[in-house]
Length: 474
Image (tube, rainbow, N blue to C red):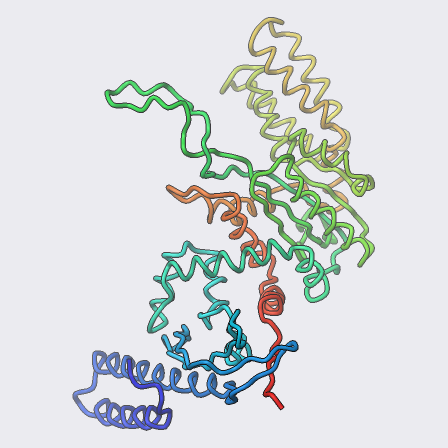
């Protein structure tokens, strides 16, 4: 690494290199290879200038005094200690004056405090955390290695992700208040939609071994597997704008706030967070339509019943889940892959989607055709299950009215969020997570996907940057 002490020398060298390459590129010897080599040297010169300038600016915050006072305590200068800071231009060794009380105890470094680097070594902490929310640590290292002279190590990257994710977890309530002030949910839409779903994730926890017992020699005889698959939760509170002509236009999403939690009983933390966000959204604006949208899982709708905040909401069961159950009902009633099953399914799918009150007629049709099956047959039992599905959810299946009102009838957005926020990052080949480690990543991913990274990072810096209180002794 070049000397970073002399900024003027680095600038002079840059000028000399540019002039030298300028002459060469104007000559006949210039070409693609020469231009690429010139760009390489230009980058190296700019990095040297960046390191020198970084060091100059950092040292401008130094306090040159033998004695400092802070919080009623007296700190005396002990020694100069170098600390290697990771900058955009590479590693820079910054000499810092260290102070300590006469009787010992924790030391203080005024330069670190004035630069906001107490407990930090990485100036590019933000970009590292942002990329780490999307990529695994090794990919972050490789990506930064393409644009930086010296990327942070995987260990350093993981340290940043843990620190930032844990800060968001511990300060969740304060963070929510900050986001509500700095980046509230855009209320320009006329419809408020709340939705949540589950997605399985691999945990680093023992679980009962499944499948056929191993039969090969030397096979383990343990009854547990090292990975447990449990259901994480993903939810959203979003505002939508209903179309002027529902027959030709789809509802347009205006804004969204995502939430994601690692596996827990009844998704309690996730649901409580969504309820709080819903209350705040309704306090900030008046909506023409309030909607709860989900698939047909009883646990979700039972949870909805338990929260009085959702009492006035229109309950919509995702149309495509209903269509899937309709397809299964057709198979049980008329036989798998039969022409009659296909005709029945297509006819009722269209009616369910476009005709008011179609679900009541569908239930009657299901009962009529089920009577033609032997009562003790497997097809009768399964057809009865599908009949129960539509009977239990009939109050959430008035799709023609929802469509005419311009409401969204698909839970696709929250299912896509489950894949994007959880699946794409936590379910790669060979991955296993602790609940805490996975939550750190989810805390960051929901902020990125909700387009609230800027206000979050400002909040994070406020939480992790102590105020400088040391002053020169009188």
